[in-house]
Length: 130
Picture 1 (cartoon, rainbow, N blue to C red):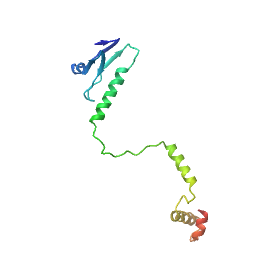
Picture 2: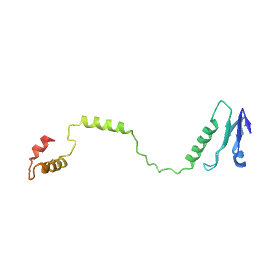
Picture 3: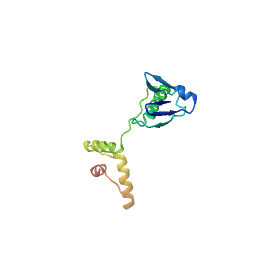
Picture 4: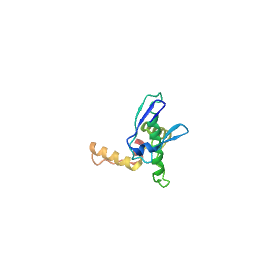
């Protein structure tokens, strides 16, 4: 089958039946996503329009036949650098401690045990260091 310098070759008779002529233009209707794609050679300036049209139709049929997710929203994915920048801005705006008081106290005691054992700290001193 030829249309305006485009030569279509079909793998089977079912593929040939899937190509419909409507108002002088060729419309490709793939009935399922499992069907083999058309072999094509193109000598026309609109290079690749057949593959683009077929891939769009395959996506539409797959989207219509896919079951819905039940209204669940997928979490948004941001680029890592955008997340890091927004986190930096948020921490710069805040005036509270970045590490909570008790975990920071454990960290200070652990580091000080390596330098000098049996060392005690006042809570106000740890707050000042923090």
